[in-house]
Length: 104
Image (cartoon, rainbow, N blue to C red; front, side, top):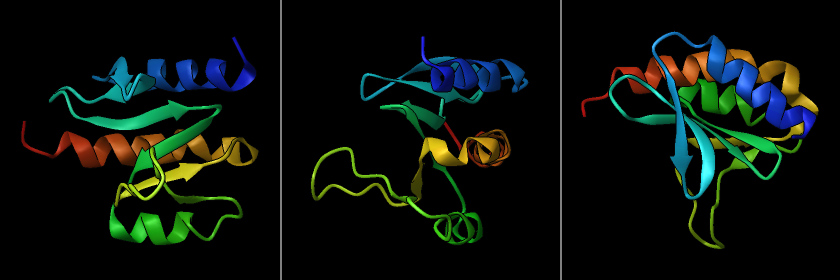
């Protein structure tokens, strides 16, 4: 297990009412309503964020809108590389707060 995967697990375990799961074959964190809000993807993390948090996060070097396949951007999902791992826990908290409010 890599250091970034260990960090993903620590973050997932620290979020109340959330569970670990899979999305696109990658590890993810789901809210109590079953909605995914965080994904561990190829050593980086992907977060579902509101418009303000997206804009702020996209200012970080190397971040971008998540694109699981070429030409298939997932609006609202921001990939944050491991170089910004110190921001992952707070971004995960924001993500899970957002998706926790969505209807099933």
